[in-house]
Amino acid sequence: MQGLHLTADLYHCACESALMTDADTLARLCRRHTLEAGLTLVDEKWHTFPDFQGQPGGVTGMLLLAESHLAVHTWPERNGVTLDVYVCNFQEDNSRKAEALMKAIVEAFRPSDMQRQHLNRGDVDGPADAGELVLEDVAGQAYFGFRFERRILNRQTAYQRLELLESATLGRTLRLDGRYMTSEAEEFFYHEALVHPAATAHPAPRNALIIGGGDGGALEELLKHRGIERVTLVDLDGEVIDAARRYLEKIHRGALDDPRATVLVEDGVAFLARTSDRYDLILLDLTDPDTPAGPLYTPGFFRRCKHALAPGGALVLHMGSPFHQPEQVRELCGTLRGQFAHVRPYGVHIPLYGTYWGLAVASDALDPDTVPGETIHARLEERRIGDLEYYNARVHGALFALPNFYRRLTAN
Image 1 (tube, rainbow, N blue to C red):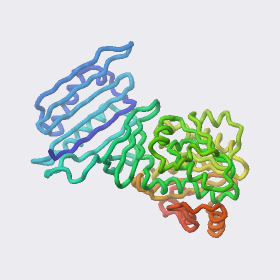
Image 2: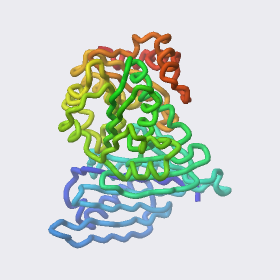
Image 3: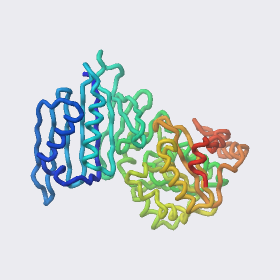
Image 4: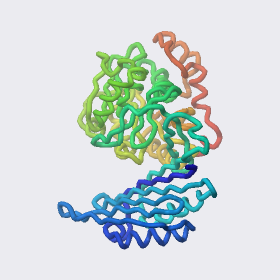
């Protein structure tokens, strides 16, 4: 049973069309790369589906290997492919062969985007740990994961794959499009770091906007500030909000139904284009730039955010991992500096994300790194904010004390 299971979901493939629609062409390619990888072909089965509504049908097929199998499914109408390679490692380690086979087939399809999973299967003496091991990669460079005893939800919304899992360690955990978003046990690392540095540095925030954040965690942190009169939360995917209301009360703590909160299911770009309100704080609590949230990381959108800020207001967003995604972080800082007078990067380790994570406050007036710790402490006291697990006056300054590599990465 011991083995390695590799999967890949390929998007926007630029290969020759026959690979997507002709079983013989795809079978020849898979046989060749399987043998070149040193694996042993036992049998095979391939099928081309008929055309449907003017679109060519895809191909599904499998090679049975002495070591286990290769499975391929194509969706020519989406230029998408799913791949599945499993090899047994009981008598010898076939992992390198499996990796070589996967690499060769992926390169043949020439995807512009890809999601991969790497799973070790079948301990010799039975499962060493209970539950499902759910792995994630950081920018395709590093893998990390957690075990979950239960899946509560696993469905495709109109915009993304929504998963809700549960474990004794993390509690209920939200994933979107195969990426960890938040969990009951450690959500405070991200939500407190996203909200409180800018909100506490601001002398009197009253009106705030959150774009994204359908789990309600950032909203709950904002509403801790006495003086906040209104928060508008705009999330594209209503199913995320519905799932949070039903299952993630320990994260939002009822904030989604607080009378000071207005929760809208709407595109953030469209909302900013029509609103005439001005906000003391705008928080972009989004999925990553390579997801449907991509248009909200652009110069045009940042310009709209700046226009919607009240005097002295600030924009806050997360940027990704400075170590694993340096170009993304550098480009986002540069884009923000093209719009705002002050851009202050900061960072925090987030257990669920498996790495040190970059965030930034952008403003024409507010620089949270220049606010003394004594002032931060006094404001936390005045606003009676005591229910915090991570953030405090000393941590405030530490968040902006950047490691040298991150300072160089985000230097002017």
